Length: 125
Image (cartoon, rainbow, N blue to C red; front, side, top):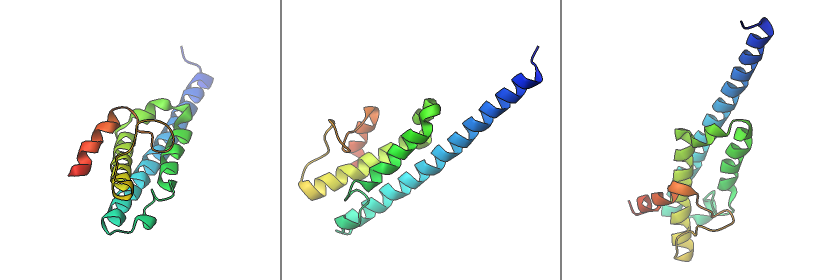
């Protein structure tokens, strides 16, 4: 039999989860918009206006990871996956236009994780 304190504990945990999930979703939407804006700026020839110019855009993704520390299962949610995919696409285009090469899969802010790397094929489109 559940006690009142048990129910209150469950309710608190669910409330915290919901708050984190909403934060992650909001930050993910921001990341997708930033990546889209960066792609537009790159196409316009204004690389310096891209959020990737100073690697600032990647800080948004780092913020998602920071917020989701307590609920890491949120890192595999569709909104987070799309945010990473869009940033890989934008980063790939930025690297190609600025340096004439694609991103690497090792180290630093250019690190591309897991399946998201396949989004490179989307850059062509």
